[in-house]
Image 1 (tube, rainbow, N blue to C red):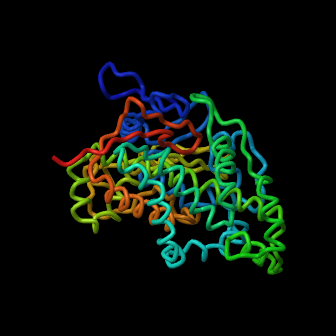
Image 2 (tube, one colour):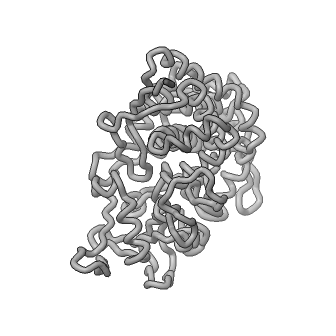
Image 3 (cartoon, rainbow, N blue to C red):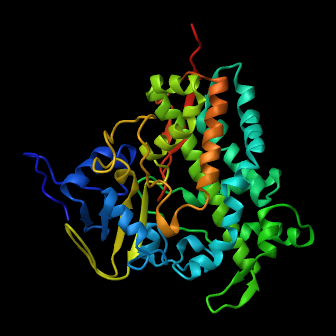
Length: 403
């Protein structure tokens, strides 16, 4: 429902997930939603939305009432797209843990720290040729290169095939601007040849680990993963490892260009970089919305979501909720630490958050070594259109030379 605005003469607040003007800059709308319609209902598309931190955290943390079994994308839930069992990010207990628990060890901080040298080398390879010219694109030159090659290395996808894989991922994740998503490739058939090769040629990569992995079914029986299950998991991890970290790098470039004094503080004191990454994630989350299917009536302070409904969690709004963050609309690398929701919350918190944080930190370290000051050309920058993510397709920049 559109809620009348308390501002005299102002139209009712409206959040439309397919409105390109709102997508380009949603924060004024989010602010009004938090104040005027914290439980918002959209009659046209038949979904609810929560925008306050406390409500978003509640939805993401209550897996009994707010189910992931039909996906976390609004259109996927509405169309009741069939979900493969091994796509564990779209599963509830106990099926979710059957697949997720055994592979959590691959993405621990210790395992991620072991590949920091390779991540740094990939950044250097992408950035070094651009130093002399002083011009670079945060997305095209780095965001689409380093995360792709890191997840390719982790999974075991041959380097020469990575660009073709990325092209397929982008085609699957992008939507026509202003239109709902209509296709979802969940099966991962394009990885079949790699899996078959690894059967006869095991290596030190995640595909080999998955081939040898045993899972424990809810009844206690143990078995190896089937190849179709491995394909689904590889497909999921390849997409997640490309998309969101790419967007994070773009937001690092844009947000720090808009806050040059804080950027200079970071350049002077690299110890500030981890907290700067956290603040970029809070301020401009690459995955700003998460949807859930509602299994039973859910009562909120401002109304009830009925069983069978769909609720959209506006994570980007929750991250700027003044009830949770002091001066929430202000970017501040010195902010007192308060947990953002950019990697989700609870049972379905992002499995790869340690890897994403390390990639973001190293990317910023290596950028600052070569380009301590930069301006971005927003006239040539272009936002991507995606059903769940928000970030830049291009973000060209020019180094600002000292003196």
